[in-house]
Image 1: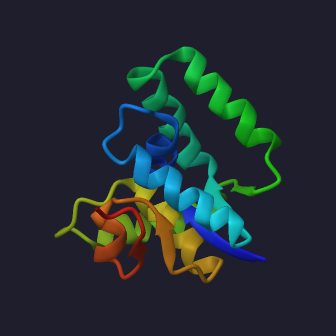
Image 2: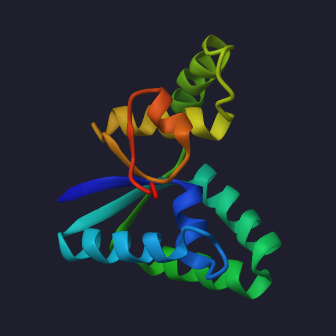
Length: 137
């Protein structure tokens, strides 16, 4: 099965009609699902997404999103392990010239573990580390 990493930025764009990238995210999502892709994400990314949706859209939207993700057959949720955290911490410490969040670093580690090159995001940090960010205007 083809897989692509889904960042909090992508989840938020898909689930917030007021997001400036909403239409592009919906269009991209439809194409990826039609082409047989499954999303890989992490519990850290979902944490960011729930909080973002709560503040931008509201409690109902955050709960609705969480319930749909938990039931989806098209989403693999990777739980960040101690090994992933340790490698993410190494990267977080190493890149003093970048503003990678710790969650970004855990995402980078998971993407490398799953041999993923593309991320459903517009976060330029993914590009800075060598991945492709698919949500570009």
